[in-house]
Length: 295
View 1 (tube, rainbow, N blue to C red):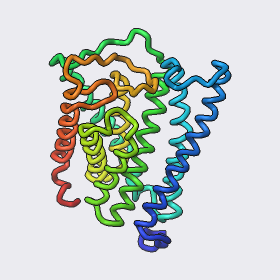
View 2: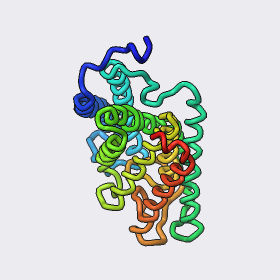
View 3: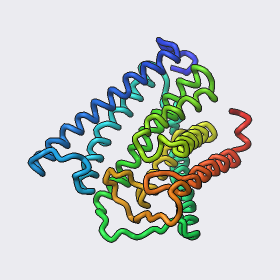
């Protein structure tokens, strides 16, 4: 059936938007509860009592976190795809999950994310703002799980939700500018429990990253580019000591040699990080400047 003859959605864009925002967190929450249940069983088996999360060793915290993510994100992704096809009557291509050139866009996003953060961290190290110390004891099994499963799962699912489904419905509701603004605010809210996202510099940095991901989606015409960019960002940040106390394995220890507000302690962002995110957005807009007029 062609796009012109597809049946229209049963509800308005606003109704679909808010129904999804009601149902999706429930689906993810149920998945997380399943993961927490099995984690509690494991804790009882391992320690014969329910230790608090912060009493666990880093390795055990990672296993707990990995289990929660692995049971919450796949149902969220499947639920989002179900909404797309059954409620909105849309195809995968409508949210940017294109078949043509998908690997090229994904690879370009990964390279952009890795290159950006390595340049940023390299600048910090060269100027003495931060010292990166190689960790002597790294759980390579956990690092591979983080690298090959958790980071790609998080990157794909969050981009599918925010720059895929929600961006599509919000744009249909009130236009692209509104869609970018609204989904960026929702992306910030979804990350409130992490780092300094609740502080002014953290708010600005998170909103800037979300706008960058949204513009990458629009300018490339593919969701695969922001998926790769998001995945690579998380992977490099966590590998270089940016973990949030969740037990993620790091290859380097992040030691500050500058005020925390300027660079930010591990897992947080500082003023220079935020300025770098703005530079990344500006570089993306410049690289695709010929397509800006079409937006």
